[in-house]
Image: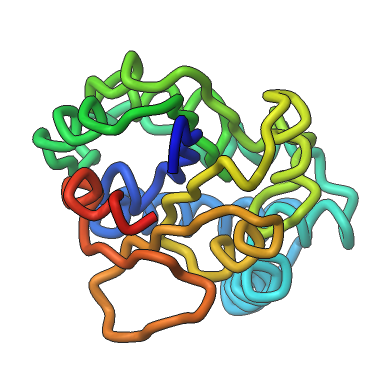
Length: 212
């Protein structure tokens, strides 16, 4: 594709959030639900997981069903004074990104303060032309088509010029429905008709981008 625009997810795409960061976020979300909905631990976990399955993000369910203030929720659940010790990152990723022709944008379901901090810690901040966090798309996280459309509108992008790089298949399905090319970052065996290229690491992208 000539002059593409690359849209990159953040967590589990540009860094590995599974070992340290996601457990902390999940615990913070559970505790937030316990406090603000006055439920016990088991019920809080059930609510968190149910909303994540139904909406792609716990936040969206809390906003829809409990009138939760999204800014307060995100601030309370993304506090990482020791974030530099939690980020797991492949340094060769910087070089791989520099080899990709076209604009590059981060599109994250996380809050801006957290996304910026991760990009600073990994040294990737200057590899990207823009960052769209969840508040930048009016708290319409992926896989919501509304969030994608807000980014496309703000950047004046034709989705047919865009390539979405993401670890979540649900999010890639939304991107594909809008007309984007899709790259699935996954080590699993599953295949999908909504995926154009599947890689286990973004470091492989320069070698595989000719297939897009």
